[in-house]
Amino acid sequence: MNSNRMTELSQLIQEQWTAHNSAMDKIYSSSHTVRFFCKPPWIYKLLRVTAVLTARDDGSQALGKIENGQVIPAEPYLRNPLKHKYPWDNYIKDWIKLANLQLLCSGARFGLDDDCITYTLEKNTFLHERECWDEPTDAQSTEEFFNQRAAESPDSPYRDSVILLFRWGKDPDHPSLQACSDVTSNHVLMPGQ
Image 1 (tube, rainbow, N blue to C red):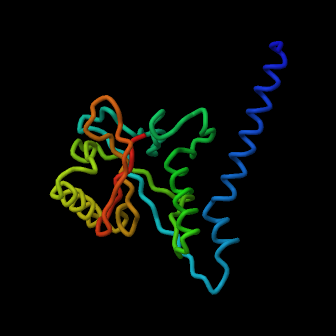
Image 2: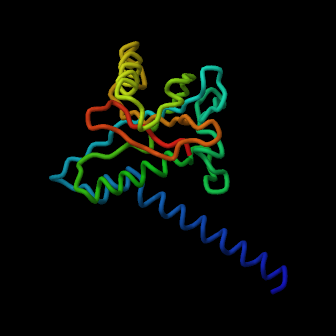
Image 3: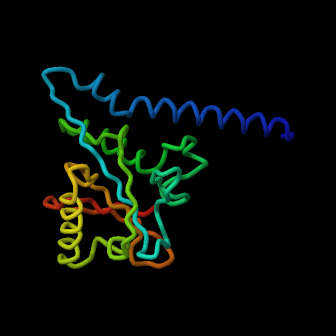
């Protein structure tokens, strides 16, 4: 196969992939879910989401960065520039869309608002190194941290919000790939990659 044909095929594949991603974004968006799947007498509620991106106390190993005054997920961990073409695209939104589809199929009358995610950056080594197998006292300390932050201000992003904690974990070389929570918890530990 000559190089021109290879280039044409590569461009065709890229165009098809882009069209596919665009169609999937429309199908699994919160507004589409509400408009087409949740007709009366259903009541469908979108829950506010706060994505907490962590870093060590000194700011190193950050899963988020501040760009133009806003926190955004860091590449390559929570955002892949080859897959996520727009500044607002990232794995966090991808996971929320998948969760919403699963919730909808289960008959749940709520979903997570993927159109209005609040991103925060917490420079906190304790949160940054949390693992699913940590002691129950660590989970309690994490809950207390978020409860205290929620109580600081009526405008706190941690008030009345589903808190997704994206942390690195204890392995110094690789972010955690495990997620977990407890039915009584005020947060969900999410993978760092």
